[in-house]
Structure formats: C-alpha cells, structure tokens
Length: 127
Image (cartoon, helix red, strand yellow):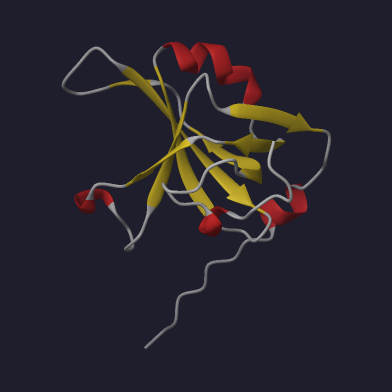
C-alpha cells in the first residue's frame, strides 16, 4: 500500500500505487442498468479535505465488497480504477469517478471521523 495517503483531488487515471483515507457518506441501493441486466451501486466517498468522489461497484463486486463500505465508516481505498465522468453527467470539468473492483484494496479503519462528515457546509451566494 502506498504511503502517505493522498487526497481525492490528487488522484488521476495516470496515478498508480495510491491510497486515500475516505469516509462513506452516501450509499445507494444497487440498481439495474437501463440497457442491460448489469447491476451497479454508487457510493459517495469523502476525504479529510471534505472533497467527494463517486465510486461505483458492478455485479459480483457489489456482493463481495458490500460489507467493506458501511455508511459513516472510515476506509483506506487503494488503486481503484479512475475514469472521467462522461461530459453529459459532469457537474464540473475534470470530474472523476472510481470503479471499485476485486482488485481494489479496501481496509477498514477503527477511526471516528464523523465530525468531518457532518461539518461540511455548502454555501450559496445571494445576488
């Protein structure tokens, strides 16, 4: 496992041997894709800088890794496949997503980082 841990914004498709400490802040129920019988599940992970990324698991990985990603738990995630969001789904340029597979290392930490999760504020300026 790579050390020290990086932050979400430091990870790109060209990076290898990386690890990020993240908190699971959202976990959707598995869904079936519109154009196939493939199932997927989206997770929202937040690092300690309060930056978020969408991580997606597919088919057998949903069952195999489901217990690794419990809501509110802190994990170290290493070497997920990093991909660009399709342009029609991006909220901002350079938005990435992680594809979590059986090759992704997930290590649960016995840490309480919920204060980071609940202290995130998103402010909107009034004009």
